[in-house]
Amino acid sequence: MSTNISVIMINASTQRVWDMITKPELVKLWQFGSDLIATWEVGTGIKFRTEWGDKVLEQWGKILEVTPTQLLK
Image (cartoon, rainbow, N blue to C red; front, side):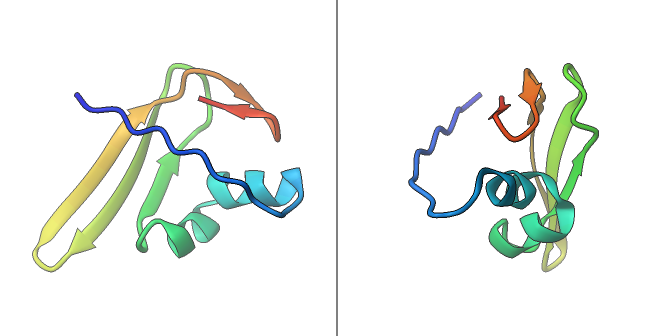
């Protein structure tokens, strides 16, 4: 299994960044139109699902830790 870690600097409020990574309608804007499927409960899954042509592509993982507007693993 591969792991991807990205680090970027964003000139936005903490709340705006949180919204961009947790609200499905905003995630579509930067995740190639993917549907975000997550309950945000620790131990549950997270999935990005996209239909591309005749294929369904999915990226998935597990929610490890959540502190709203502060931390998401």
